[in-house]
Amino acid sequence: MTRSRLADVATMRLEDWAGAVAGPTYLEENLQIPRSTLHRWQKRNQVIALRRGLGRHVFPLAQFVDGRPVAGIPEVFALAKQPRLAWSWLVRPSPYLEGSVPINLLRRDLVEDVVIAARRSFYLNIGRTRESSLGAPGRTLFQQPAP
Image 1: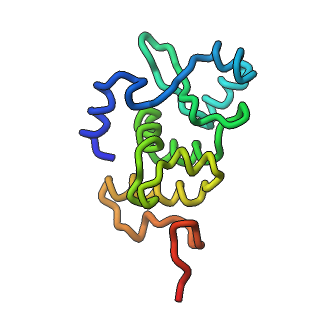
Image 2: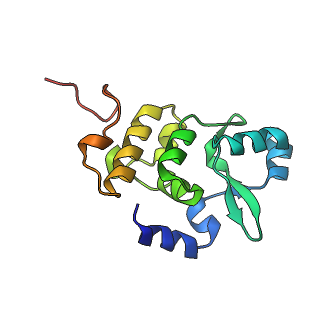
C-alpha cells in the first residue's frame, strides 16, 4: 500500500472504510470480551484497534469470530506496522489473493495464504524483490502444485 493510499484512508470517515466498529463497552456486553482481555490482545497486536476522536479506540468487528480475534492479525500487523494501514489492507480485495478480501480468508482460517499475500504486498511496496517477499515454501490455496 502506498503512502497516498494511506493518506486517502486518513481523510475518510472511519466507518466508510473500516466497516462496523465498536468500543470496549459494546464488546464486553455483546461479545463477552472483558476489557482486560481486549487490552491484553491490543498490547500483543492480536487485534486491530483504531483511534477515533480524542484517543478513544474502537475495534473492527470483522476481526472477531466467536468472541476471539481471528488468527493472522499479529502477522499482518507486524508487516504493516500501523493499525490503520493493516486494517485497510485486510478489508480490500488483494491481487495476491485472486481478488479475495484478506479478512474474509482469515475468518476461514486461511492464515498462510493471507500472510504470504501481505508479505508480497508490503515488501513489494517498499522496493524489495519479489523473491524476498514470498515467505515460507509450501503449497497454499492460491498456488498451483509444481509439475
